[in-house]
Structures are given as structure tokens and as C-alpha cells.
Image 1 (cartoon, protein in one colour):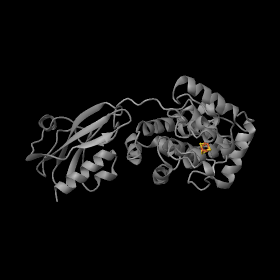
Image 2 (spheres, rainbow, N blue to C red):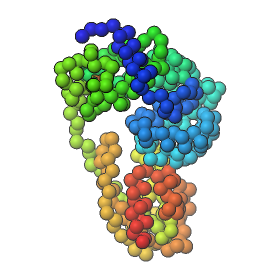
Image 3 (cartoon, rainbow, N blue to C red):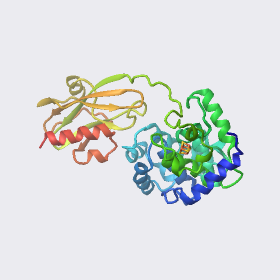
Image 4 (tube, rainbow, N blue to C red):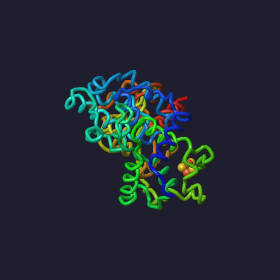
Length: 347
Ligand code: SF4
């Protein structure tokens, strides 16, 4: 069914004003730093998870200058647990670019914002709409789902042809004003009403013109690419402990868990030899599976107990952390589980 773009956007704007979200911690501000931070955290992560991270992050880095001046390790530490760590590294680089290239002020156009690290066209449009009321289209996964269902678009989102059509549609639907309510309305509808499983069509302001609703095809749209099975990988992590502490190595910035503290990886005998340590005994702990976006990692944890007064080879990227404090440091989620295993093995 053809309809004027204004009809779509007006209904969404009216709905957002009456039923949308208005009290999220990053709303009611025009500060591009806060808006940018929330938009990056919300990529791939749900609102409820983001809120406490966002608040702690702002206490620690209250403005872009503070973030740019902080060491990367401190930023990674504040991010630890949110996943997709490339976002944290890009966040830090972006803050530095804003300081160096833009005099500490975020540029106000979507085009310039999209030239900064970690900011794609959709995020740039959201920041520009919320901070300056700019007229620019967002198109994240949630918005693609709403468009595919409402307009009956058959292509697979993420493919070049479907995304071209979706961007053209997103541009054509932009209202003349009320950009903040429209942009927030798309986000709210995708997150709270037109959800992937079980969309609440009875509450939807777009129901009267929705193709998927009329044809009962909500479960079929958007079309999905068949998923190839994820490759399997294996690793051994050596948890070296003196009973009170665990030895961690900071990973190089690139690669999985880049910049995070992780127990040394490799065969226990080789790891101990490399670090100049002698273990009193080594014990296999229950294996752990961690699923990344692109592969499944089977972790074989081995606990090696060393004497309390032992000394490691002098490598700058090594850190002994107290067992009780390690989960709060910059360690990835599966490593937190391993630390708990070590704590219980010592009971
Ligand atoms: S009517 Fe249902 S399927 Fe259509 S846009 Fe609204 S929630 Fe989504």
C-alpha cells in the first residue's frame, strides 16, 4: 500500500510523544558527548545492560577531554563486560580525534561525524538528530526490521541490494521537523513493539498500513540469510595462582579480547617456562564454552599453583591481581567465570 511519507512519520512522532521512552539517562540532553557515548554503547547491547555502564563511565570520564586523556587500559577496564571491545578502542580514538582535529567539540554534521572512528552513518545521523535536530536517516538492525515488515520488503537486510533500498526508503520517510521524536520513535518501536520475536502489533501505531500484519507474515519478515555453522576453536588458559592472586597478561590491542587482562594462553609447561615459574601442581578445571559472533571458543582452563613468594620474568604486560578483585578489573566475561572457579577450587 502506497502512502505519503508524512503519514508514516507523523503517526510515529505522535506515538513517540505519548507512548515512547522519555526518561533514559541519555535523553533530555543536547550534549553530543553523552549522546555519542550512549549511541556507541547501545550498538549490539540492550538498554537495561547499558544504563549502569553509561552512568559509571560518565562518572569516570565526564567529558570528551577526560576520555581522550585517559590511558586506553582505563577505558577498556570501564568497558569490561559490555563486549565487542573494538567499540571501546574506537571510542578512545574518536575522543582523541575530537580533541586534536575539532578543538574538543564534536562536529555537527552527519557527514563529519561519520568520518570519526567507530561512527557509522546511522550512528552519525542519530547523534546529529538528538544533539542538533539535524534531518538525517538512521538505519540500524531494529529500524530495518520495522521497514521490512511495514513495507513488505523481501530482501535480506545486510546484503548490498536490500540495504540500498532500505537507505533510500529511510531518506524518503524523513519528516520536515520533529527529528528527535521521529528518530527516537523508530528506535522505541523497534525495541519495544516491533520486536524480533512476537511483535506487539495491537499496540503499534503503524498497524493499519503494515504489510506484514495484513498478510500475517511477521515471522517471515525480515528475510534471513541461512546461518552457516560457527567455526570451533580451542584454547588453553593457564590460571597461575599463589592462593591469593592470579597472574594476568594484558593482550595486545588487536585481536580477541584486545587490550584486556587474560590469563596466559598456551600449554601449561610452555607458559610456566616462558614466565620463569615453577608450579607445585597443575589441575584441569571444567571446560568452558564462549560463543563469539564469528566462532565458538572451547576454553580448557588449567589451574597451576605456585609458591606465594615466586617471581615472574620481568614482562611489563604481566599483572598479579587479588582473586577477589580480578572480576572488577578489565577482564572479559568468561575469564570472570574462570576466576570464580579458581576461588572455589581454593575453598
Ligand atoms: S504492525 Fe506489527 S509487524 Fe507491523 S510494524 Fe507494527 S509491530 Fe511491526
